[in-house]
Structures are given as C-alpha cells and as structure tokens.
Length: 189
Image (cartoon, rainbow, N blue to C red; front, side, top):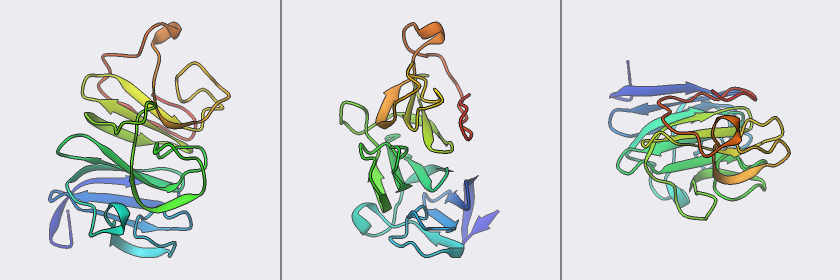
C-alpha cells in the first residue's frame, strides 16, 4: 500500500478521523477536524489525507514511525529518539503536553510529569480521552482522563495533563516487562 508515492508503514482509525505514516516518516490525517485532530493548522474537515504540519506550524512533521488516533486527538512517535508529539483536543490532558485547555491544531511535544520531553517510546495508543505510552524498557505511562481508572496510577478521580507512570499489579511499584499496549474508550490493556 502506498500514498503519495511513499509506502504506508502504519495506519490508525480514531473517532471520526484517521491517520497514516509512510516509510519516509511523513504523517497524513483525514476526517473530522473540529478539534484540530488532523494537525494541519486548521479545523477544516478533510475528505482525503492531508500532511501534518511541523511543530509551531513550521514545515511538515517528519521522521515519524508511528501514529495513533483517539477521540478528537492524534499522537505520533519520532523515529530517531522515541519522543512524541500530540495535537487536537486537550480537554483532559490526553495529548500529554501539560495543558488541559482548548485544542491545538499543530503538533506539540509530549512531556513527563516532571516537565521534560519524553523519549525512548516504543509504542503509543490513543483511547477515548486518554493515551498510553510504552517505553523501550517495558515501562508504561499514561495521560488524560482518569475517572475510570484507565490511567493506571491508582487514582480514579484525576486527569493527568502530562505522562504519569502506570503502577504495578496490586498497587505495588511500577508496571514493568510490558511488550505491547492497547487503549480503548475507557479500558487499558
């Protein structure tokens, strides 16, 4: 499968929008865009894939190896260092940039709860209003809506605007040795 002359490496379907990455590291999104979830610096619905702009609306997002689409937001992993970007709805902090207000129609960096940019990501998965992040060391982090406990930090009444580490089974230590993650509307695997 190819798009715009490049082979497609990953594809994701979210709530009313979709995204794909190419083997050359480009990202394209299409569908409903009221929250800026297409990352093209607009809120215009797109019926065909449109390339995601770069951070700060400079150029286009490049060097990406994975994309995932949630409920009005999108996340992507940069291939070189495993850092992440998010765009779209920020209401509950699901894009993990430290902010819970409004939306962003251009990519912003995903950060850890201490404020530094996250790196070393292996996989990302967008749920309804939250997101999961798997690091190459087998640890798991989450951000966003936590009212149903899907963040995995032991609290079921808080939202997290930046990445928090998922705690271990029975509430002891941190979850480790994980090889794959999946987020749905309000359940994490």
